[in-house]
Image (tube, rainbow, N blue to C red; front, side, top):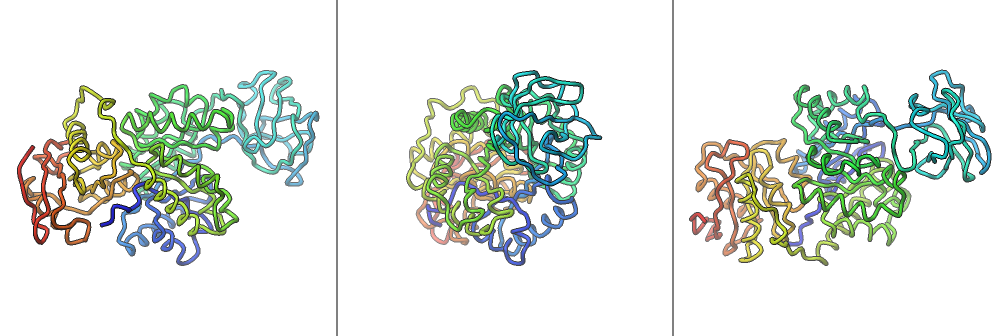
Length: 488
């Protein structure tokens, strides 16, 4: 197998543009590793149908493709206008009415979905509408009515989002609808569940409790998109399996100028704490309407790759754009280019000390060896995918083959940079036999060649989670036979 295989993973959102016959197969062929079902749009039955279509397409392609269910969360929106759209002028008064009986909107007022908004704002606060395109300054609160002054000219249409500059809105991350949709995610066997607008670790733990009670073992994804989440970043990362840099609402709340530095911080701290990280929102936005990306978008994606993100995400580009397959092809091309240009040199002096788990120690030892003696690949026999995740936190040019008999574990590994999931059943095998058979399997598949050295990690008890405690340095012999079966 070529060393030029793309290591950064691609997450693509499904939608009307991907529902047409043949498009889903083309997306997987172009390189999609995980698909996102956006539960903010469409009814649950439509998302279940998409999930089934993904599994069928993945089977046809012979690929492990993960499914991420993205919860709507407490997105605050204005309600609808009588005419569908209004023009607002700087200096005008424009009221927000937090009432279920608010009349259809006009040029002077509109209802809002969050009825607690008057209690969360004070005079002088700036409210941002439509991703910050329109700005309002709060003048006073009159019961359920917030009286504002418009700060800039612009058009405003139905159901646009609303944020408070600097954050500080008190509503929780999980709505009643989210709690029901977690059960839908469990029903469709989602591999990942994303929690929108999480504020703290408890938001993530609540989602995890609901998911487990519904029979789901999905990995929990925290979407960092509120100012409060930045303040609680450390605890949120530890309470998550995956962290998403959700740059849309986050950029609106904290300001565009702060976003690049925060993106790097979130990626760095997620990797340091052993978590998988996604970079999302408007990465190739121009490709909603254009067949090629802008140079700025190319640099944006490449910078995320250089920063070490596991996965880059397409939203509207794939869900509703005119060129969904071209967008995936462009993303794959940019990732490969960035990976070729930059070699990662792991600084083991900065690696964590006093590791409490044997599998983490084995992972660190494997990566140290791979960097210093040169190996073709690392083969990690794993039940849950945990060993592959620990290995992949040390950025390296060495591919990691995650060997697991569990479908769910292989699909979760599809989100991890440098990790390539492989269906391998180690039940009943001694560690030496598992090493021998897995090397032969990868040799026969063309991923290994005679004379190449590999590292194999496993546990004495192959069917136990977190039991990895053995590392072997081996060489591929004639016909894929494993040579040098000794322990280090």
